[in-house]
Image (cartoon, rainbow, N blue to C red; front, side, top):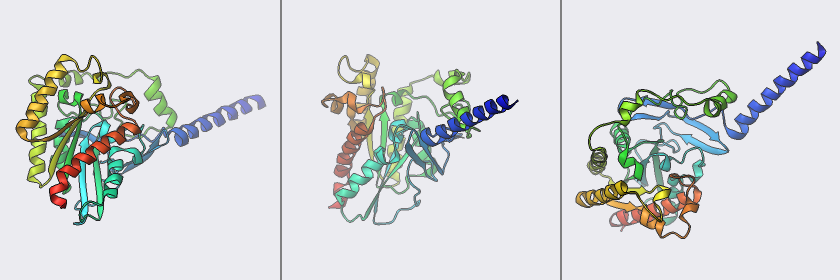
Length: 318
């Protein structure tokens, strides 16, 4: 009986130790929560703070990966709104201070631009958003009176399907509630085989000219920015496999040219990162994985955005 009690207490102690370790060291048990939306598809639930693998993540009242903000900025504030997917967001592997938006905030403050006394770079983003999600976000929340709206996409976004809330609460990457225990989250994320969502097949088989539909969404984002007195900047990052030889696949080459023709016709300021990364001495060192960027990559992107912003803003700050 005494031995059984010792074993029981040992098991309980080990359980508590593992649970505390998973929570305090890795951040399990407190994942970011998503909410569904009939137009946007899904977005990060507002007002969240957590740490994942030691990286601080903060979501403000407008579901941005940014500190809390005032809806209307002070007249002396330069405000830039970046909208995008997981590349702009930074994901769990990026600390809040190393996101593209925060790096850009710091560098623009150092520039002492014109008469602006402060700089805010807002980060409206979520994993796997495409142009239609991003347009719907702007239509819901507005441009926050930003002087510039920056749309940051990657090659795959041009093939993105219609917004849907189907993954929320059903895909382990889009939880809609906190797990009871950190151990439960580990079990659900890594030890249980994910189950497909049957209804997603219809979404993924969307008919029509998908690229054309997404280009139209970008056109509407540009129009929205102009109607709300914002300048518009579009940037696209490549997949890692597109860099070097053999380069983008045939369908991607055609789509890239289509995007170039579109931006020229629409008079959109556009930056393609593919030639910039091809000219970089070690482009692979900038990637976290096949699509996302690490700190060095985020610094490279933020520096490029800064140069483009200064050119756009130059007439306003003389």
